[in-house]
Image 1 (tube, helix red, strand yellow):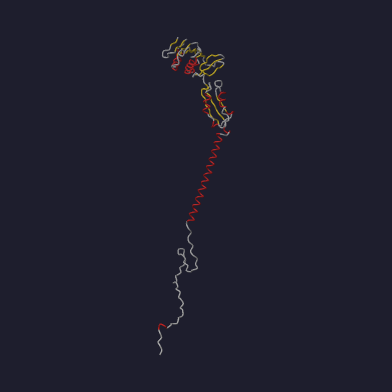
Image 2 (cartoon, rainbow, N blue to C red; image 1 turned 135 degrees about the vertical axis):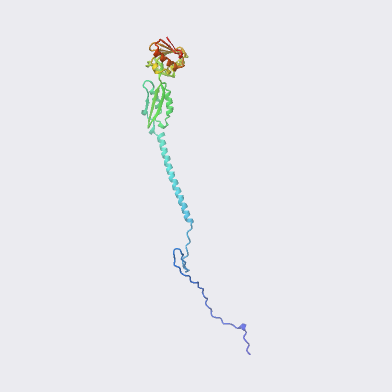
Length: 296
């Protein structure tokens, strides 16, 4: 008797392997490329998309360009300033240190009335500055030095470019002459001693004063009085004498005597004397008290 076959022991013959079915992607519709539609490649062999360039590179390039422009601007300005400094230095050297503007001895001109002022002394003082550039020449100091010359009352000093100097002298006017050995000692209206001359200048009265301690004070008062008398009246005076500061007298060319008194109210005395001379002929005119003059 046959045993029934055990179902668990039944061997099922192996079946033939079934090839695996590959899943296919659904087809996509092809779209014509345009400027606004990106192109999509389905092929696996399509090249990978190139990423956009990084913005760091253009920024760095712009920074470097700005730095180069700043350096160019700096050096351009430095060159300009260097040129300006060199130009200024050249001008300063030409003016203050080069012989281009140095005072020349033959370019010193002194203008003065002949015989009344010592022009040679002024020219000698100016000659000490020969060779000095005009901008460095102390015109004010030279003017004060020239004013110390006894016969000079005022002086002006002007630079004459490029190498000259113009000096004009105003002489002191003598108003009295004191007889001394060898000539006449002249004095101006301020009592300044103008030096000795061999002969009495025209129009300058002779002063007779006692020699002693009061001589200088008497001469100063006489000079002050003479400086207040108008020129037309000065022409009438031939001599002046003073025994004291309160006893000044004039001798006129006509022979008359004028008692002036002291160095006071000189303008009023001069006006009264001019009136008396034009109206009264006398040998004595006393204007020491000008509000009550006396004639004789």
